[in-house]
Image 1: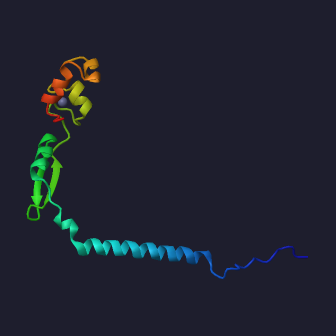
Image 2 (image 1 turned 90 degrees about the horizontal axis):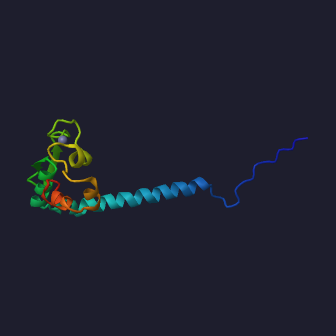
Image 3 (image 1 turned 135 degrees about the vertical axis):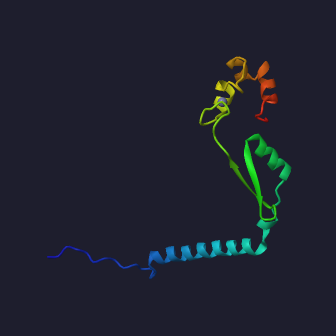
Length: 129
Ligand SMILES: [Zn+2]
């Protein structure tokens, strides 16, 4: 005697995969419409950079800027990650605590609480806080 029951058929008449297909089509249509709207409005072409602020940021971080496309787009790169003292990778920790050229000459407690010379150090250093 065979005890297997036959697979039940879906009573709604629509396979569940049809809903996934419809959802995929809906999401694809929405994303295509948003992409077309963004291209047709040209909004991204009217974005203007504040050149002076960007140049100040680049100088503070030793980044070189190159202006492209009628000076509407800036390409920036850092020449080297090395510190002036010779270590291969410059970090904030190195600059504040270790570097012979830029380290803070007060106590660590002054740095932690921003008391004493620490405030003057950060105001006058090249961190540009
Ligand atoms: Zn250094």
